[in-house]
Amino acid sequence: MKIHNCKDYEVMSQLGAELVHAEIEIKPDLLFCAASGNSPAGLYELMAEKHADSHGFFDWMKVIKLDEWVGLSKDSTFSSEYDIQEKLLKKLHIGSDRYISFEVEALDPESECDRIQDEIIDHDGLDICILGIGINGHIALNEPAEFLQPNCHVADLHPVTLSSGMIEKVGIPLKQGMTMGIGNIMNSKMIILFVTGKGKKPALDLFLEGKIRTDLPASFLWLHPNVHVIVDKKTVH
Image (tube, rainbow, N blue to C red):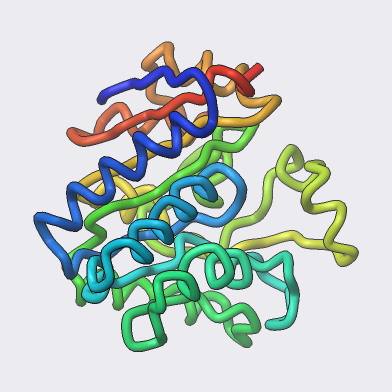
């Protein structure tokens, strides 16, 4: 594991972009697992700039969505789908032929998770997995629990996740999400974990202890041979 302490969000994002672009130069058709939210937004902006400056650079890259809430409509601007479409896919001109996604309005979320799991297997796993960390130490929607699941699954949201101001703004009660499992993430060839934003320091401090614990799902990343933890020192407190 490589831990990078960056002075601010911009430096954090720039380092993430350098790592991603270097991997795409080696394998243009790699499978890129995209997280939603603010943590990777700066990376996606820099990828969009790269696309504008170097037409064709992302023309073979495939994208798969990390997770999605259960219970939203396809028109919701809160969905991971909306976030990734607006920040990444539209700007890189990546269409449905190169995009794998949990359906927002899946009628059977369990079956939808099985479908995504099959897609991951068909693609021989992820090449790059982008992650943020929750204030309770979750990665994707793998929440603190007595045990963690290896494959794509429907996750019950943790009380700390449910109490976040972000979820309260949705206007409808959310209880579950569809998410890649710890095994899917750990099988990625490279993992980039962005740590940024207020309230993240307690989770970061526990993570840096290096102890593997199911009540801190991010701690399992210590077992992976190729992880970059990129910390925005300015906002993490």
